[in-house]
Length: 218
Image (tube, rainbow, N blue to C red; front, top):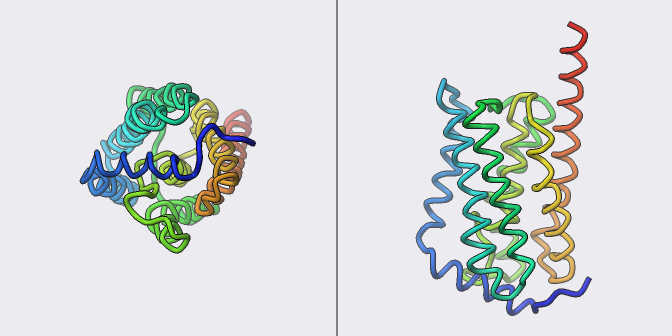
């Protein structure tokens, strides 16, 4: 796959993005920590806050990252921006307006996989980037598509069984697109993106199917 930009231009986008929005990266980590805390200490309003934050992340990535920054070197970023914006609206619709997605950390297979993905996105991902000589500010940080998509998959694996398939289409598609680009550009920390997409989507679809079967039998 031939890309319309070089690795230098790609990392240059991150440099421009990080320098422009600093210190919002710290705020994004605090928001992620809030999601983790509320998934552990559930309450009547925690699910709305979690879904509102996830919706914000995807809207931010769509508008601020893709359209305002990434589009300067890749025209396809306009399409990515629209899709990420739609994903943010889907989180808001299903999770906040319909209140159909609830979260609680569990010790089953999806729950443990979710924990691994969350830790990877917030901690392991930036460490790997540093080990691969991707130094701030010319580096993807939490709040841009690849680590935040991995994080989103992890949080969805903490959800109950009512995860709409519609909510998985765009993150799964991006896991394939992002992985393909990462392979060409040598962004080895993004190799985990396709693993997260495949495993999380399979687990969520399997769990949803199982829920529907049980419900139909009752």
